[in-house]
Amino acid sequence: MQSNSTHRAVLCSYQHLTACEALSVPLSFATNMRLKFPLMAIVLEIAMIVLFALFVEYEMDQTTPQQLNITTSTDMGKFLELYPLFQDVHVMIFVGFGFLMTFLKKYGFSSVGINLLIAALGLQWGTVVQGILHSQGQKITIGIKNMINADFSTATVLISFGAVLGKTSPTQMLIMTIIEIAVFAGNEYLVGEIFKASDIGASMTIHAFGAYFGLAVAGILYRSALRRGHKNEESTYYSDLFAMIGTLFLWMFWPSFNSVIAEPGDKQSRAIVNTYFSLVACVVTAFAFSSLVERRGKLNMVHIQNATLAGGVAVGTCADMAIHPFGSMTLGSIAGAVSVIGYKFLTPLFTTKLGIHDTCGVHNLHGLPGVVGGLAGIAAVALGASNTSVAMQAAALCSSIGTAVVGGLITGLILKLPFWGQPSDQDCYDDSVYWEVPILREPDHHFHGHGDHSQLEPEV
Image 1: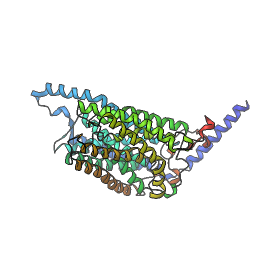
Image 2: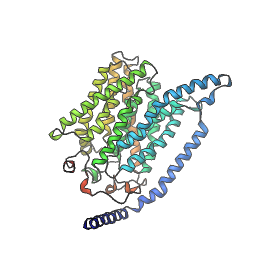
Image 3: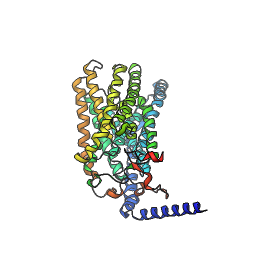
Image 4: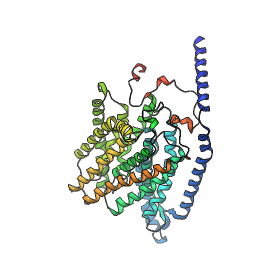
């Protein structure tokens, strides 16, 4: 009886605490969600519908009556052949990226939910922008390849989202999605159509671009008050476990990501095999280096969640080239080591010395491995693994990083304007600013810092 009474008292105290916390949320946030965000989202969606009505049609609508049966059969065969790979990439976008960012103890709703919002808008906008650039003045015809490329364009924004996670409003993320995908599409066209560079798994055009775009935005939006950390920028045992779900989905489907647009046959097969072996080598190396750099040789879940994926990023540029399985394994091992070292030493340095607070460490998962992949592509071309020009490969890497930084700085200045409803310093990394959240919360002493798991030992 006494135990039940105690339980009810504790529950009431938590409910009272949460009610007080809810009252402490400034009214400006509610105003932003009630008016600015819905208005912007509706206007953008109406704009997408109008653009599709004016410029987009089905791929098979272009078929002449005499060729209808043959072309339709061929197109449908290609569609069904690529659809499983497309679904793999789709799972990475919505499940992989979304759950990978759920490590924050009070930001899981936003990590998965805003990820869904960004992806849904980005898929539509990416289809239009990329279609306009590649349609040569004709109407945009929609098929499975357009859908795959739209997923790719969306991935850049989701990578950048990781750099500013917890410090931006949904309205700001809508704006960043529109700007970044437009800049990405321009750079992707430059790399693929002008430079004729090879980047089949998009180490340069997606991963490096998305990471450095996000870092540039994060630098402009830097909050000096958060330099020494924030009470909500922490994880729990279970939030880290949820984040690991995202890691596993990304890890399993990465060979599809790197091979889906490769030329069917030998090149596509090589892309799958090279990515597969790069990933497995990366995992072993990441585990080893995590133990090596951590105190008392213990594994750090932050490293395991992220650095184990770096091999998929690094092998992307030359995934379809004849680099031999041992070459892809070497690349994966280098990427795993570089990523762990980045999380351990570079992330704190960026925050304290450079004024760039990278919430998810996208520089270590996407930026550095993306650069490694770009350099590996240059080396592979120089060794005769591809007919691409070495100079053009180098130009593609420089273009991807340079365009991302400039575009990110401009976007950051736009997002820094004071009327986008960004959270105050004390309310960062908290779902309750923008979401209805459950009343009951765990006691704070059950939480531990992301990257410091020493407090788990007594619980376990």
